[in-house]
Image (tube, one colour):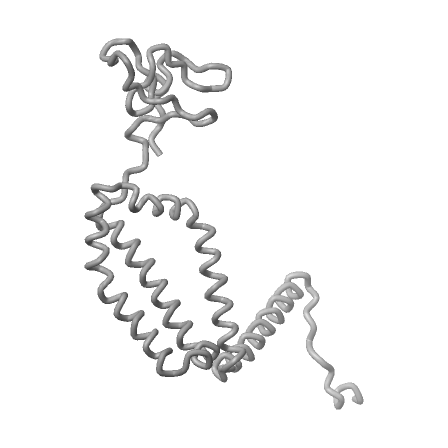
Length: 213
């Protein structure tokens, strides 16, 4: 993040709350005017920053998404939704409810939507140039990205556990047994390494013949 130039963001100093003083109003980038020169009479002055926010230069503000970035994010969202629909339609409860024929049709619909989505999104992005509010929800979604990632992870985890519980996988069972053995071996190796470091090395169990001798 670029360093903040106090001469630019607070040329007249700051008040007791740390808000830059603006005796001549604010410029369009949110920074105080240094003088009354160039100020339009009767308005057109940008509102001051909200209390508790530090104003920054325009160059330090995050840049808007490009069309390519917007399309990529929307395509990813469509992909997630269509995959979720297809996965849900292929589940046993849904097939039992609507039948194999309709479940297969829903899965096919998901593929169709994903195939035609790029062309539709091109039109949506062009329309958003004239109506910026059309995609304003994406900004809020980005702010909520951490919560969405957690929700997505939990949904994926739940679906995987339910699927494996209904159709236990022999491969996963075998992997679990191997995982337990590996963890036990690592634990034993760590204990032996610590014992060696403390000089508590055990020569192993005594052989019965040696004990008798």
